[in-house]
Amino acid sequence: MNYKKALNNPIFKIISQAAQELGVESYVIGGFVRDSLLERDFKKDIDIVAVGSGIDLALKVSELLPNNPKVQVFKNYGTAMLRFQEIDIEFVGARKESYQTESRNPVVENGTLKDDQERRDFTINALAFSLNESNYGALIDPFDGMTDLANKIIRTPLDSDITYSDDPLRMMRAIRFATQLNFTIEEKSLEAISRNKERISIISGERIVDELNKILSAKIPSIGYILLYQTGLLDLLLPELTALNQVEEIEGHTHKNNFYHTLEVVDNICPNTDDVWLRWAALLHDIGKAPTKKFNKKQGWTFHGHEFLGGKMVKKIFERLHMPLNHKLKYVSKLVMMSSRPIVLSQEIVTDSAVRRLLFDAGEDIEDLMILCEADITTKNPNKFKKYHNNFKIVRQKIVEVEERDHVRNFQPPISGEEIMEIFNLKPSREIGVLKEAIKEAILEGEIANEYHAAYHFMMERALKLGLQPIEK
Image (cartoon, rainbow, N blue to C red; front, side, top):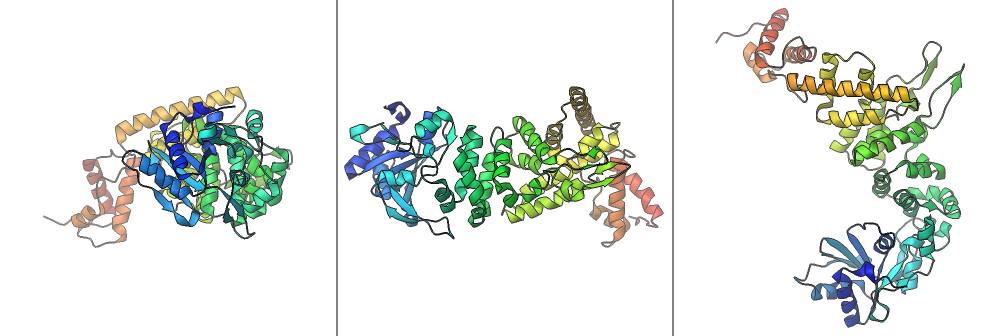
């Protein structure tokens, strides 16, 4: 069968010409081929295999292209890359690999196309199109990847235990592809992941998080996270999540399974955001429930303070997995800590004061917080579902009204600490903080308007009670 249609981009003819001039064979392999056959938009990168020097082929291709694009050469890996029409094209020589048990970095030797296809992670990623003049566009499929594509199967070309033990990141990739493509991992392959799960310890946190992010960015992330759980990988990577997978009953009182509830929340949030960090907040929003779970006869099961503890636990997870310890961490931690605030608000009379405090604490993240809380409604009772969403509409409307009137989102008290020091001739002291906090609380409680004159008069009254006198000018 001929698949020349997939090779419409002129770059492939240029690569073919360059390979012919060098006297080497060339093939396009991997994700581009897979996605072309699935009629799926491919990401902006293409992998080219040369049976010979990939670096020499990249340099020759650059010579033949207009403006001779710069070639990045990675001699240690025997690879090279150039950009063409916003596409990253990576060139590598065909190779065979052998692994040491303590590393996923292989010992590499020159090899044939078949050697190169054997080292690929899955049959659907071992497919190649020929760029050679004799059979240009022909599909090379030594492991029946086309059948696996048709049957929506993730399968390794060689023995799964060897494939996953050699490079344990492939276990994460198998689950990621199953999630992204909605494919099934072949039973023997899935069992091999469970057997080799401990090997994930040799993979860096950054690599693991990259795969976790890709799973979390899929249309239905729960597919991947359930596979991670079933294979035992999730317990090694995010034990805080798997700790939620328990339901206890005491004296007829049970609580919901917060693990599957969490995955439902993650799936719920996906149609409303592509932001992977907001999806992380959904994934971690209940992690404080396992360590705070208690039972008493009056209240049944309680999880008091789980949001606060969960927000603290986020930092430990980010540190352990080498995730960014910057504003991303602060954002996720903040949303986890605040994840119940709008829910509580929606169940009570919505006061202006409560909304002002919510706006002040959430700041610019108020909309993301509301999206998270609405995703948190997982009740199967249609009447309750409708009621909760209607309540959230009321909260949203109140947020708009209060913000338009009081402007408390990210507000700074109208009178600064420096001005208080100047008015009362004070050096840095406790009294300054007391006055600033009193002004902020008065505004949030609606006692005074969020403007200078009201704040000034309030400050003067409060200062007298503290025994402070303004200096005469």
